Image (cartoon, rainbow, N blue to C red; front, side, top):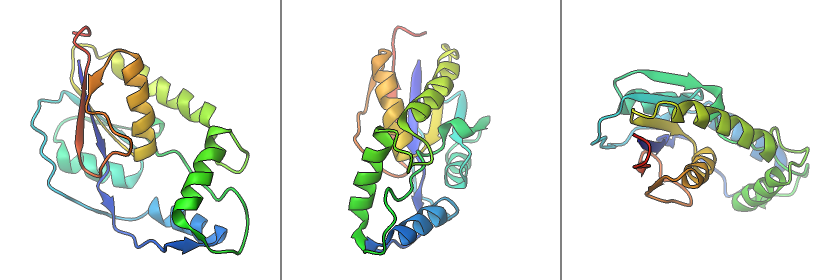
Length: 180
């Protein structure tokens, strides 16, 4: 069984380097609603089915790179993020991302969804996907979600193109030769 992971195309939205908590939350809101900038991704393998996040940037990407059946699901959405503290001090965007991720890992109440819930929903969709043992499946999703999917696949015996932060519009292939 082969599973292809693709992060959505790059989002067409300018980001400020420094943001207050309100500006960060507004940026995240706009990011989820922005258009994408398509790129030329080459899908050189035969895929039987595509599972895709319900966020528009992923749906646009999936429809661009895949012509077959696309199953759109909320279980593949990005890990939601919100400012972990409410302040009017401009903080670098990377600091917001880092502290919000720590808050998510610790299931902090500032985050819309804690790690336990995220991992549960991702495992649910991966269990459904892995029932398609004789098929090659394409998954179009988001950086954080794909990173967690990659960890699950590795635990389940898959090997492939490992990443820390997947590039936009790039195909990463994982294979489990025992699942045929």
